Amino acid sequence: MPDRTGTHGEQQGLVEDGETPEEAEAREVLEETGWRPGPIKPLIYAEPANGITDSQHHVFRIDGATYAGPPTEKNESDRIEWIPLSEVRGMIDRREVVSSGSLVGLLYLLMDEAIR
Image (cartoon, rainbow, N blue to C red; front, side):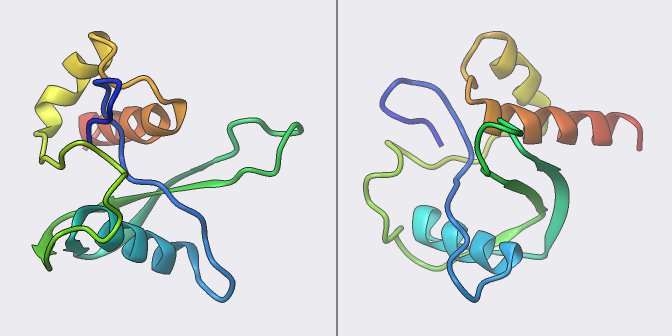
């Protein structure tokens, strides 16, 4: 999802009380994109500033989604688009993806796909 700076990133959000990370992912995807995700599979777990903050990043792989309606979170991005995985490396090289949170998941996904 591109934002107002012209860079891309995936949706993100907090795990609410009583939610599992997978439930939070499903809720955030629906709220921020308007798409109900298909199966949610853990991809990688990271702590971007281990020892400095207690920020935990649970990154998931979702293969497929069903359109449910317009996003309910209107200020999350300028537009929502599907990008083929084959284009992601070039986007990273061109600095169209710069958020470390996005980069960790995307680079892991590219690596995972390369060794399959």
